[in-house]
Image (cartoon, rainbow, N blue to C red):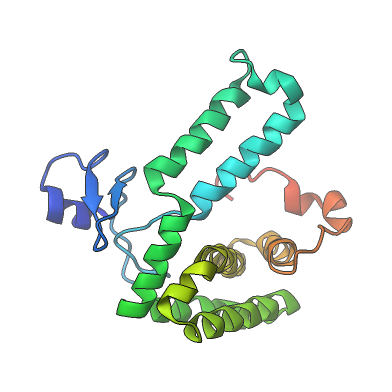
Length: 220
């Protein structure tokens, strides 16, 4: 949560590790207090709940465990600790199912998705690529589908919808980053969209394009 938001509820006390209760009585632990965002920033928010930050580390830990084979279960290797911590994150951040229910409630009662659209859609429109068009089309389909359902029925689709919305946001933010940080991020946005929105394998050219996978240098 932002520094101003933390001061509002906790005063000058350290908010890290404190627990807040949401409207639906779900409790969340504060894991980060960040500086207030500048007025001209994209995606303005005071509180941020992670979805990909919950799901993707678990997937990465499972892949690392597979690479290490049986050795990955031994305490001598760091991957076993990473695997445990990835699972604990589900408790700290709230399970993805609970986050999906929170999302549906915020959309239904507070029209939270409208602010999301106001920020994400222009990013995708500026990109003007086949992959950004795919992201827009997928976004329209998800919202239309959720809007056609009764609240209880929408819960069956909430988790998948939340995962896809997170992927769409990632594509949009990568394209937005490309505007001032370089073409590599536009390539990464296209690869991300193909892999996670179109469910297509990564193309072979990505392996030989060092701009895509080479480390980012400090100050880049």
